[in-house]
Amino acid sequence: MAMHNGDRLAELLCSRLCHDLISPLGAITNGLELIAEGDTTVMDEAIAMIGSSARQGTARLSYFRLAFGAGGGEQGVGFGAIRKVVSDYFEDRKLPVSWEAPLPGDQTPMDRLAVKLILNLLLVAGESALRGAALTVTLSTDPANHRMSISVRGGRFKLREDVSSGFVPNLVDDAVTVRNVIAWHCQRLAERLGHQLTVVEDGQNSLDFTVT
Image 1: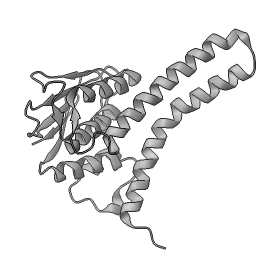
Image 2 (image 1 turned 30 degrees about the horizontal axis):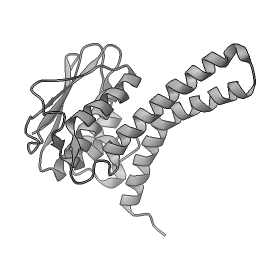
Image 3 (image 1 turned 120 degrees about the vertical axis):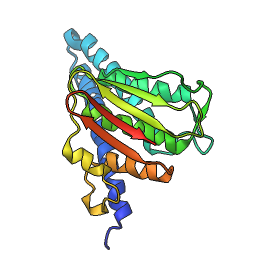
Image 4 (image 1 turned 90 degrees about the vertical axis):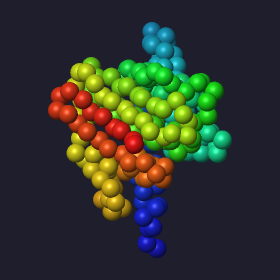
């Protein structure tokens, strides 16, 4: 039976998620194996490895639940909860994320699709940020206004061509790959919200993802 394009795209997204989850889960397994060997000299190290990896895995699962799943439901997600999953996820990556004031209140519910777009754009921006770079998020204080921007500044950054190809409007499904599927997903989310997504890389100075 031939695979529908939707099935293939779902497989690509699942492949990306599994790739990000393998690392902390594998580290937990390694820590348990060290404990099972009974070498008391590495016991503390093994326990620390398991604890750190469990926190990383939990942070990634919480992030992916909102970015790709049905987390939050139709009522939306409070802005404070969004900031927390972003903070936990990027703390693991040791990548600073700042939010430009003014911002919505922590209890302000954010549109579910807008939340997905924010989180997916942050994934692409974070992947582009290299040594010394930082991310800045700007949002409207009006939850009904889905305009937003995410900037990469400082240090080194590079938006790879095999990633940026996913931002091409009306990209045919067969051109979507594991590398560009998140960017493709961002483009579809912006379209569903009725907005335009633009990406501008200004040499060594800045990389901006803007939804207008």
